[in-house]
Image (cartoon, rainbow, N blue to C red; front, top):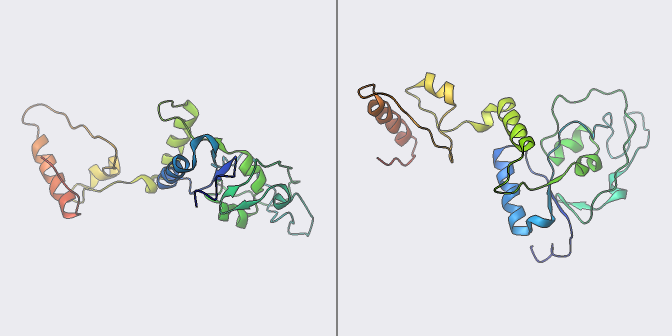
Length: 200
């Protein structure tokens, strides 16, 4: 498959806008070449064309057809899109931007406009405020997607930190005799019962 994609100068990656989806996009970009990959993460600020689907709204009015602008197959485009905004119709805008291309198509978003929002993969060692802001907002709006391994015997603690998540380090501090070892012992038992490896 990688050989077949060598002829493309730009590749658009559009995966679910959550933790696993972002990790998947980063993995594919590194395999395909970060310098030619653009990640689609709709902001919801543009691309809503009033519920028109494939250039035709509910009344049969014809609008911009993304298929005439560029070829797209499986989230991969052969060249950058040239977008033309469709006229807004009197339809209710969805409360959140589409999570993937299929949802965008079903809801009637302008795919060409959404592709035009695509951006390069963030640098591993350079973090922009906008990247951090979007991630924090996404975690607040979708807390269930970022829950880690729970501690069933300590529901209050689990509710507070939303479980232990892979890739994070949790530091427990306190004075001598405050119960740190007892707490960690109980947490370790709960995690071990879930099949998670524990090291002391």
